[in-house]
Length: 216
Image (cartoon, rainbow, N blue to C red):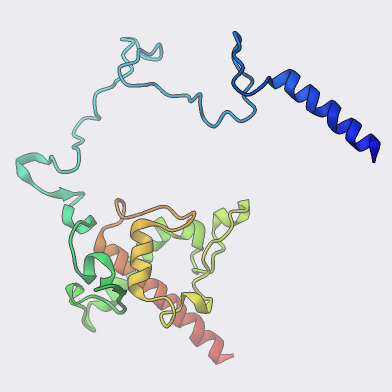
């Protein structure tokens, strides 16, 4: 036991000798064990850059690009989609909430019928494969590409906690919009209607899985 305390004392002395006491001032740059992104490969505003021939770090926007909310002639469109379709409104269609609770079911604003429901699901499949399948897998089982690199906590939509009975559609809409845990927010990337289309497709995947299981 005495050797443990002796080793502990030696390590403590070495640590203090190398790192110094708290509040002690040094003339040399500190040793950064955890840099915490203090030094980044980026340029600050109005900082010159040797990369460009004019040495200007600030670059003009890409030709024909427009910031959100400043479209020509007062138009409010992003890639042909109205700006309000990305959020900022109230009601179940835009928030997934009915009062203080999560709602369930497809909103009336979608104007679904037997004729256009299939088109919404196909649109949801397309958007799901683009934005969601990299993590959740094309089958919605949580076995996307990122799962092969040890990313934890990816939702498997075929498990009971994510079924509509326990996980309302409105809650899924909110998670898509604002993110949760390691999942980032997609509200600025996916239009409101497409979020509902993705939810409809996820419910279709769940129903198909249940039907296949019941048929066995």
